[in-house]
Amino acid sequence: MRVAVVTGGGRGIGRAIALALAHDGWAVGVLDLAGESASAVAQEITTAGGQAVGLAADVTDLPAMLAACDAVEQALGPIGALVNNAGWDTLARFADGPPDLWDRVIDVNLKGPLNATYAVLPHMIARGAGRVVSISSDAGRVGSSGEAVYSGCKAGVIGFSKALAREVARHGITVNCVCPGPTETAMLASVMSGEGGEKVLAGMRRAIPLGRLGQPEDIAPAVVYLLSDGAAYVTGQVLSISGGLTMHG
Image (cartoon, rainbow, N blue to C red; front, top):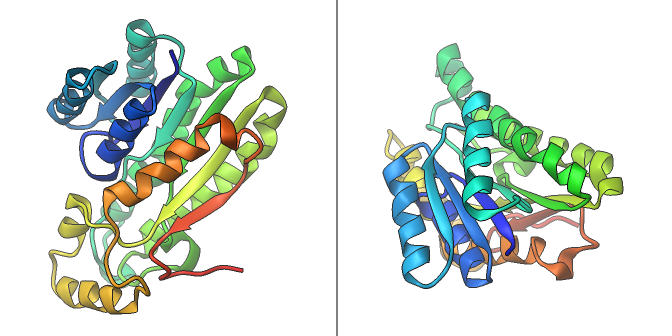
């Protein structure tokens, strides 16, 4: 049985990824800061005939991530894939944002993937196989007004992933990034709930060539592909899923 861990798997894009992986035959460790949400998604998977375990885990806490990944391995078997999906942000211009806000954004969006990857990588290296996919953001490729620190973190995830891909390729491990554009999730609703948020959303909708915001189900298939046998020769890559909002040559 192939085993994958999805951080931030209790809702939104993470939930869609966990369900899609289960449908593709993966056993899924669903990790989320909200343990009840993680358990609910795991229950969805097991009710549908799959295998899953849902656990509370804070990606900003390395010992907690180590313990959670150990628990997943005890319940499901060796972890063959990690999806770094957990994220958090709030809309604020950089000049107005206090340092404690920066710290929270950095801890979740940059240190979180580092912690989760560190928790699983030694075992992948020992086994000579593994997949890591990090959900970055097109904000990390082109920037996003009101999300300067978040954009910096997501750019950092891309750089980290490319460098790591070089380091671990000889161990049979691939590392890639998926960069969603604006996607309808509870996090996006929360980020855009502040002053001017609805105007920003309206502008995004107008700018997207396909004419709509993304849905979590638009993102999940890319992750399934990157964890599949068909992507065995794909590493160090960055895939944007943005309805054409961002296009790169």
